[in-house]
Length: 572
Ligand code: PEP
Ligand code: MG
Image (tube, rainbow, N blue to C red; front, top):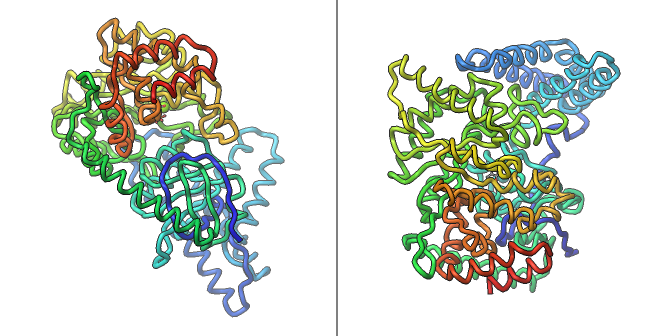
């Protein structure tokens, strides 16, 4: 039977393929009976996974970067202790033998029992160790189940992945796997998972709520990313119509790609910078194909995800230098680590009750000076190989900015002591993502070389909307009058003192907002490479004077309906 389910489309395009259901997080484990003759083989499988986890944790300790925070080693040691404890190492073996069940199920049952015991403990410290038990079990389960669910089934043809949720680290992993589309039951419109799906250039729909219950493995699906719709088991006519639309979209993309080498300037000749946002050096191929004239945002924290242990200074240096060299003299703006919130790193970040308001981004870096120094050293060294600039995320106070400057000086001094060459006069910019910073911009503009407006977070914090929560995604509105006023005020303040202002949130890649942003005075946009051609086409078709007039009227309005009407007129 054919039916349609709706969610929030976060990456447009059309995909047609067969469903592949991914287990719900690590703890959704299969449960099956194991025949008597296979019991010992199942125990051996459990032992193997435990041994592998042991080796993995041991190697984490042995390969700790010299400058890793001291808590990190203690944390891994604790996980080794938990792993070796008979309650985890022995009890599941007893369960397999007694209940004739599979290893995953035995381990999961044992974990549930331990977690229940932890919950009854009054001591808050000990109670919190529950999360450590869960993390250790998750590691073993990964060993038992493998990453089999995280790659398309061999020979299955076009595959569409359906998950409860995806962590940003999972999506980084998908940069090497080819899925035709992603569907998740939860998630918000500018969560990093959604952003990554866009960067993979495949359709994605989040917040589908019950996709994993309604869709069966191998069902035929059509994903319409623009409508946020999934058609399950479509009939022949619908399938034929979507096949036609998909090929039309392809033709459209090819046409847009021809703009690659045309300079981006408005109808009246004003030059506009269209830069690219990247997560990993491997994204450079897409950047080159897009015609972007620089990297406006390198989300460097992705070098830290989907791996064991922290990348060393050398590894980071090589990655930054590669990007600087491949972009051939054009700017590369490397954002220092923005971990925390929805990008967690076991042992380094802690989720807290409210991770988006917690120890995130520059706050985490200042709390972990060794970690920060390693990254700054790597960037300063790579800066000799191109036009590299530093960008500091989530600045919320002048004091923080001063600490960052001190950390940069400290990193330079340490490089000098080590006799390693580095760039002394690297430009330093700040992200404007916290409303307080946008409101009190002057001291930041005075001290920094440039600023970049991170509207994904600026909207989250100004409108009090969790960007990862699908339930409030409908309130996530870049054209909210308060947002437009904040963005406009930052652009104007920068122009007044002659400091460049860029915008690198998802707004920058939305074609329906291009003219509005141009009209507000924005001249530097940074977006996913895939969006560059369409935004460039819109720039080429924009009369700046007209855009300024309508943008002024939009800015003067506090009525959302009027804003939409004027926006339509601007785009007409
Ligand atoms: C932003 O907040 O707009 C931004 C570009 O940074 P991120 O999406 O990585 O938080
Ligand atoms: Mg941000």
